[in-house]
Each structure stands twice: as structure tokens, then as C-alpha cells.
Image (cartoon, rainbow, N blue to C red):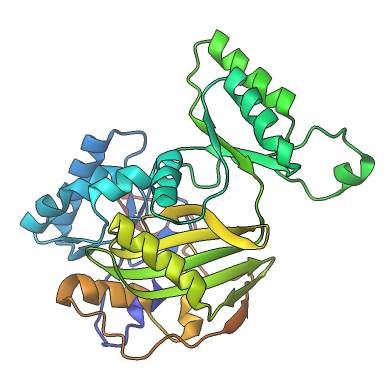
Length: 341
């Protein structure tokens, strides 16, 4: 939001920010907070977004979530005067499925880790038995779009006092996971497809990408994550991996490619067809990617004349801001106004 407000063109912007949680901090930092409907299907959510943009005459919609509901509606938004910043619906559908993403990326020559997709306890145990033969620590995560939710490291070692006194980690035993899957099956509870794979090595590399429609990468800034530090790297090899993926999946505007290392070589972790939560870090590289994306969407010109200033290292620290006391101010709730309280 700060980067949009402090845009290099000096354009005054009004920022509407939406969240299903009326207490979300972002709603205190925007100009107009919006409470979005919770637990609704894609069609209902898309209609909400269309109605809201029409009523409030929104010029640009930058969705960080519910992309599967919105990506195929570019023309519908255009008809009401709203420019939707989103990759094609086919790319969104593919990248929401991590197993399919790995299949396509591997076929196109991008290195991916060994993985197995499982949907029941027997498949899970077989995958663990097969992949553990390399001696690597294993992990699993849902194959769908769950952000970091559902990720666990597999560890069958007994608990020690040292581990109990250490900071908690997302660790679980193979036996516990298999038992949970069998219990879900007996109780008729759906088990989402899970990916079992090696737990890859640090550092995690998050590449913030700006690309033109059709998949032409304009800027790629790799960010190495190490504790509270981020190092924006001058590494053409990493950018080349992102360039190939952006081109192959025809990604548009702001997207994010995540890599980790296996045996010293970068491999694909996941691709997000949306801006990353850490996108604002790239401002320290001397570029305003959110505003460049808006310009690209509206004018077909990102306005970037100089390359990013790299490398640069930053520290991530906690920040605070004053907000209105609870019960003060207004929230836009769906398409009506109500007092927050």
C-alpha cells in the first residue's frame, strides 16, 4: 500500500482493501476497509467482486487470493471499467495443483525434487518407504493451494527434553499421519491429496517477478531468506529459472517463484500466480514493482528504466502503527455500510 501511494508518477490513489476478518491489520492501513463474504463458492465470490467494483468504480483489482474465482472473468471486469490484474485462468488452475505443476515444470526442463502424490494411508506409507531410501529427511504438504498450512516435517525419532525445550517446529511422525488418514477414511472425512518429498535445504529463494501478458519476464528479483534477514541477489541463473517458468506458464504481472536447494542445486518448491507477501522488500532494490505492474496493466509500459540495485541485504523487524480504537471508523460490509463494532 505504501508503494502504491508513493508511486513515482505522483498519482493520487485510493486503496480499498478486503478481508474476511474485520480485525485484519491491513484494513487499518488502507483508505477504505472492506469485509468480504466468508465461506462462499467461486461464482458467488466473483459476483460479489464484480458488484463491488461496479458500485465503487474500482479502476484496478489486484487479488491476492480467490484467483480461481476471478481469473476467468477478465472480460466481465473490463465491461464495468475495472482492470483485473491476474494471470490466465489455465495457469491459475495448474499452479493450484502442485503435483501437476511439478509434472509440467519437469517436462519443460526445470529441476524439481522427487515427489509422490498420495490420497490414503497405504499410499502415504509406500511413498515414505520409497523416498526415505536416499537417507533424506522427508516432509509433506497438501497438493492444493493452502499456503504454508498443512506442511509437516516427518520425524519418527522419540522426543527428547532438548526438543521439548526448543522452539516448536511443524514435526509429526509417519505413524501419526497414517493413523489420521485411516481415521478420516473410516469417518468419511475427505483427505486432500498430499505431496511427500524430501525436506529441501536452505536458503529458500523467493523470486518476485513482473511479467507482461504472455509470459515475458521484465524483472525478477531473487530474495534469499535466512532467519530475519533477506538478501536480494544478483544471480542471473536463478532469474533464468524464473524466466523459463513464467514463460512456460504464461504468467502475467506480479507472480512469485520459490526455490530451495537439493545437493547444492536449486530446485522448484512452488509457483504462486499472485504477488508474494514479501513483495515490498524489493523496494530496497530501488524498484516499485506494485506500481510498475499497475502501469503495465493500464498503459502497457511498466515505466522501469533502470535495473534493480543488487545485491542488497535487509533485516526484517517488527513494525507498529496507530489505528482507530475498536468501534470507531466504518467498514464496507458487502455492498452496504455498517459501523464497525
